Length: 111
Image 1 (cartoon, rainbow, N blue to C red):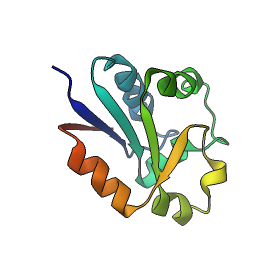
Image 2 (cartoon, one colour):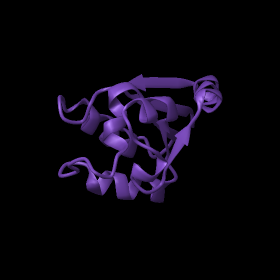
Image 3 (cartoon, rainbow, N blue to C red):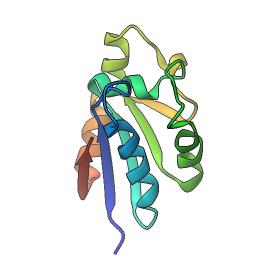
């Protein structure tokens, strides 16, 4: 039975493998509707200037398997970045969109 899944990535990409595991988990949930939200220090993982040695393939392939990618707009701005600094296919999500993503999710996983 297909579920609406939201993966929330709060871990910075350069401190733990949680970020990598979150993307790997998303790719493995192919039989569900999956959305990813980067927030807090996790937004660094959605930036195109961050080392993507482990995640480049995931970041390129996730949109191809209909996984929607969002970054917390407030956290992006708080860290001195803009939407232009995001990996392709990642959209900025304002507070209203984040609330919508959380409300729609039947299950959430936090990394």
